Image (cartoon, rainbow over all chains, first blue to last red; front, side):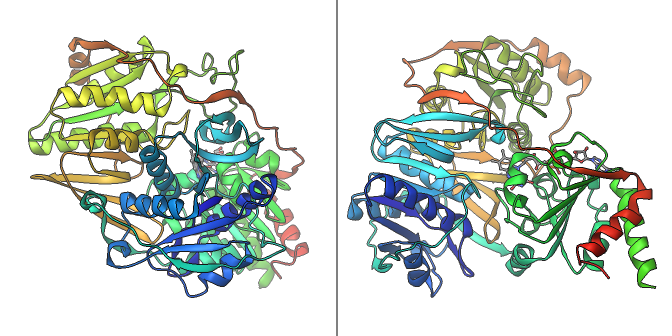
Length: 325
Length: 251
Ligand SMILES: Cc1cc2nc3c(=O)[nH]c(=O)nc-3n(C[C@H](O)[C@H](O)[C@H](O)COP(=O)(O)OP(=O)(O)OC[C@H]3O[C@@H](n4cnc5c(N)ncnc54)[C@H](O)[C@@H]3O)c2cc1C
């Protein structure tokens, strides 16, 4: 039995969770079709059952109620452990988001088993050996998960989310969880909402203009935003940009951000680290602009322009405006 | 008064290509040098801020080779006042071992707050803080970018899937830190002088490590390179716009 911790928000199921269920299916096939259950904690979208059913999920264990309205890592782990007991799972997995990693780390700790973060593939079932990203994805580690349950997270965008050929039942099973008082000590008290619609428009954009550390600072985005507007597109940024607080997180492209698949992606001043690449690799055409001709983004792109984005991008904007008259 | 323990790790300073050691057990940093990851640097900064605001002290701890003293000194240079080195071969340790060794140090002393990086830049395990909290029976908050201590409560902020999250957690607690909330300060000359004088407490492992389950490291296959270079500098604008027109994304 495989159990997947599925992350949801008001908008629906997180894409990374659907990728993880897809990964779980390859594991299930290798294990002669062991069923896949999901565990959902807290408020859930209406189409939870149908969507997870289409991905081949048998039962959806759902913990809800006041205690789960706001996130607590410990309470979520208790819910996952309760679901594992009901389902009898020998594998517990989650998407490799910050939250997913936290939850499976807590589950593994409480069950006194190892946890592998950011897994990209598995080899053989006994012993159960996984390959996972280390050194920020620049290297891979083969790691043995010697105890049961095998607990791990799946690296974001390491697999495509694909619905199952044979859907599952997707039955919602209410989950009773005995919470200890300390489960609620480290709990979110409030959330200042980000505009998640913007992340959706990034995922579905035909044109994305990207900007990374090369933008130089919070005021360095004027030209790229203008280019995005001229092309009817959207701005996407690297993690450096969101970490430094130059732009909001919902604009981030990559393993821990959105996965985009536009007709044209124009990354400016982005080096093309593997975690960024994970989010933009399915772009049809990539036109990179960078001062460093050897940057990974420049060599992996379809087209490359060597130069300072603060000179090249305004010149492109000017040329577009000139041709439009 | 909140005494803070900040745990830092000596990691290879990779910005480009990664090389592996011959036994494929670790990344080879001979040509790139070592550093403290951004998350750890921010943890040190937050620790120094909390200690200053509450009249507490910061102790910095590292588990690793004797050379990790370099990272301890850099934390001492920006305001930590004591340092502990648990000397061990990092390749032999798994996250549970690291958490266990930190827990030994914490349980002997009275650190109200333990700060760690959210994940190590090399091993990327994402779990030492959680295992530590469990071992100490303390609450853990992960991925925190800014925090402050008021009496017996730590207030923290983290970036969550739905926006900026606030946490309010009773001390003693364990908090893992992500870069982005604070700018780590640079050491002053006096800071560096002081750092040199501090005697680093040396410890050895308290038990036989259980290990990490690592079989070996490999390098991912290189992505094929096939970029067509359109040119250099702003003069390429015409060629670029020709291309964008051909691709049908501008008139
Ligand atoms: C677990 C994990 C998850 C991660 N998830 C993500 C993720 O989701 N998304 C993501 O993006 N990253 C992610 N990262 C971070 C990733 O490893 C890189 O650190 C990040 O993508 C680098 O951002 P950057 O390209 O903007 O900055 P840098 O790597 O610093 O590159 C800046 C680039 O700009 C160029 N440049 C500088 N000035 C100019 C100029 N004036 N004009 C033109 N070019 C210029 C430089 O030549 C360089 O190539 C993750 C890392 C980890 C460990």
